[in-house]
Amino acid sequence: MFVLVNLKAYPCDSIAVATAARDVADDAGVRIAVAPQAADLARVADTGVETWAQHVSPIDHGSHTGSTRPATVADAGAVGTLINHSERRLTLADIDRAREVAADNGLETIVCANNPAQAGAAAALGPDAVAVEPPTLIGGDVSVASADPDIVTDAVTAVTQVDDSVDVFCGAGVSTGSDVAAAADLGASGVLLASGVAKADDPSAALTDLVSKI
Ligand SMILES: O=C[C@H](O)COP(=O)(O)O
Image 1 (cartoon, rainbow, N blue to C red):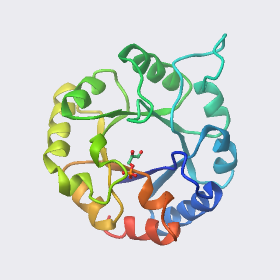
Image 2: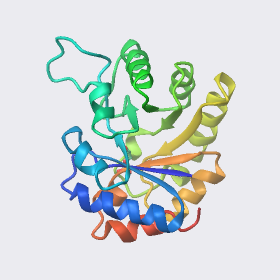
Image 3: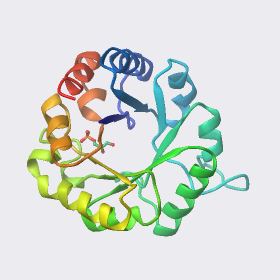
Image 4: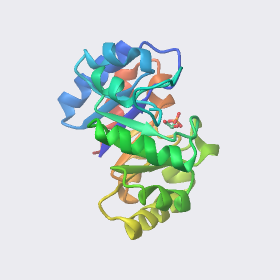
């Protein structure tokens, strides 16, 4: 299981979380990555933790004020990027182009989706993985794997029917090792989470619990 921690714009110490994630990943032998805000990418990558971008724009060089260029993200040390997060939606054409430019720059890609139908559609664009997240459960206390397990199994089915080389992640409300184990039992290859670590009093303890049943 791959544990991807999105720090969103939460008021956490991104370097402290990154350092904790690096150490827990090393100790547990589990793949953990941290996705900070774009301005923090290089500092987070310098900790040695696997670093992802929260978003990239569907562009390369040009007159694109305020954009997040995939090549710049890669130069800052990111090895992957989320695309079309529920809080950073793109048009279909822009998802397609962002994935393409990101891949051209060596970034691994996870396209986010609200539901199994969107997950299948996202898989057709050729990302490395699709993350299914019901928006109503994001930021809550109940994991998608227990609140709506069918959405995970149906997303796995939908994605596999389109392209069985695309991994399926799930997210929303994931905060414990039991949540991660339940996601794995439903067929997910990874989890995408945020508040369970970014808002934890002790992010290291939260991360240690998250990987305890993998
Ligand atoms: O990117 C992460 C997801 O939106 C899940 O957020 P959450 O773990 O706070 O529910």
